[in-house]
Image (cartoon, rainbow, N blue to C red; front, side):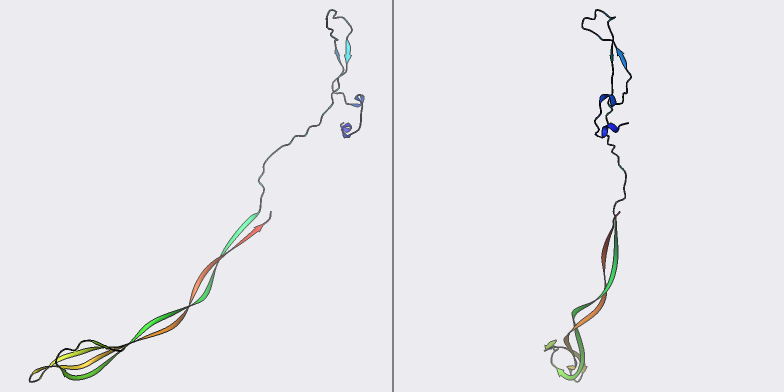
Length: 161
């Protein structure tokens, strides 16, 4: 029906006529004689093509993103320098009379603590019976110990739709 729209040249006689022949009375300016000749007019309608856009929305699956978190356990050796003291206690017998109580004293790395007692002789005298010698020695050593350390890694994967 609309083959003539494809660029072919046509005359008005080739166009489809949508309205039938309509008789109209010719009207003159003076309108004095209504019985005057009637004029026949042919009306042709030219169909026009029109495009219309229809806009709509729909949900479409897009990319899928997946995040996986993994906890890993690794073993590490920790090295630390530690200090400690070793104390050696030695009892030294003296058993000699003194006139007064001796004071605690230091000789190098050794602390000397006097121990006294009273004994009865014809007279009362103070006798140093023993000394306790305490020697301190500082020892340093490096200690290594294994510990568990945890860390996480994340893997991101994307699946195209």
